[in-house]
Image (tube, one colour):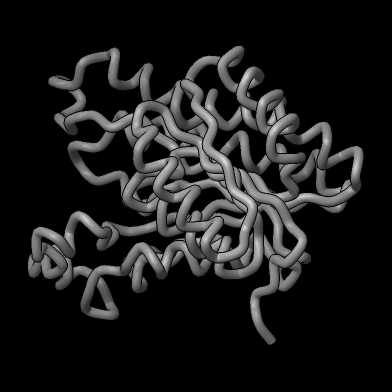
Length: 253
């Protein structure tokens, strides 16, 4: 048994980011052609396109502001014209900001998190799901976070946006399940990325002690779950919030 995405087309928002680029590569390694969304990092997007084409996959890069509805619709039109219609939607992009206490956080940061978590996913769904319904098949994978479950001090804007996202995803899963479309959330912990490896920051003792498995997960750990949920191995899983946290988050029944 292996994850086989041969013949599938995927689109990944935030595909040039630290986690996004690993997801892009992993989907391609499983056999999918991948459309790479980027906001500003066109150089990394084109680098990834070249890398995927060298693997024998079709790939192309597409720019959009994921907080703007018309920008996403314009991207969709270009994706359909230049790449094809994706079967797999991975909503990974999010606006970065500096974490502060609730009382100190700029209200604009709450707005940016709502826009990049909830509205980003709403716009992507409105843009791309009609085709999935038409073909009676699709996989939607959404990036959430362990922070949604833990609600630790200092991350209120992020948690607020991601918890709003959770509600959207659960409702969507119930609405479009009858079309053979699954909708699931992957919730990473504090993940080791290329940047951490370059800066030798893989070990974080204070955090590591809070993880039952004793260490941080990697970007590959997250990408593996994304690929699984994008595949037919997860055909009967939908509406799930799946922590990939080494046991730091254990949802209760």
